[in-house]
Length: 184
Image (cartoon, rainbow, N blue to C red; front, top):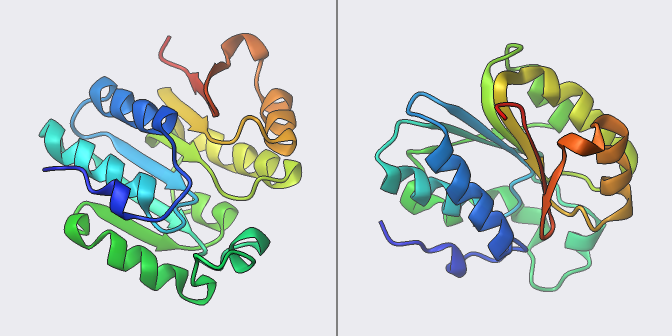
């Protein structure tokens, strides 16, 4: 399947796409991925096409409250009142692969058993408190050899929370992405 992420409005960049491509290659069929903070689906449709093209059976959940944030409500390019509907429209060609879960991050984390997820990508709220909370609640859901990653490491709140949570020696940073791979 050809990629169509360029047709979806969003903020995802090439370093995120490289990470998603790597993760699909790294993990086997039967894996379970979660993206926390999916906005309008640009990164989600990229991941879905990568999964389809790999021929692997990978479960992929996208979690967001789809209420937007101040930056979305102040952006004339975004219909902030209809983010969920926009997401559903954008994922239409790959909707069979993406499982949208409309919930707050912490509440959604409780839907998963401990040690059940292979890959978790955190890109929801960017303030330090929220990122600490996301890491605290999502990390126990990660398998022993899984990977957790996120975006916006150039944001002060994100970097402070990530450094608070992880041993800096275990942290890899590529562009604006951070990751911790427990399978090393």
